[in-house]
Image 1 (tube, rainbow, N blue to C red):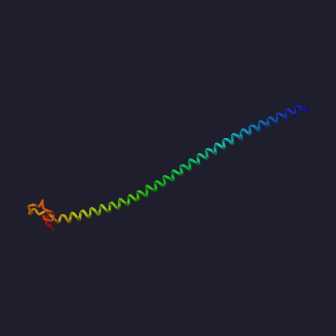
Image 2: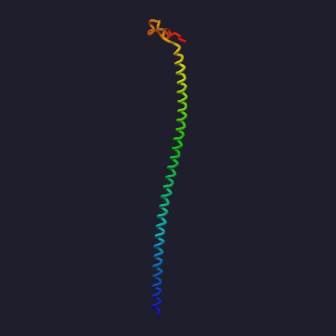
Length: 122
């Protein structure tokens, strides 16, 4: 009698050893998968950080463009006001010059200085 129970115990021990080997294999595979997932999570985090940095840069650039556009709009307003003022001054000058005409009765009108040949019209 002892041989049969010993064989059964040996078979049971082999079964336990095989089960422990399978458990060890599964734990090892799970550890590797977890490490792989952690590495992927780190890559995703890095990518999100990069996207956030680019978004901040683009936001800053957009603010700069907006400020430049506002500054340019103010300059355009100033230039427009100056152009209007220049047009008004030009019109006033035209009105002043229109009061004078060359006196054709002076024979050397072309050779004399303007004040000598200009006469007031109005």
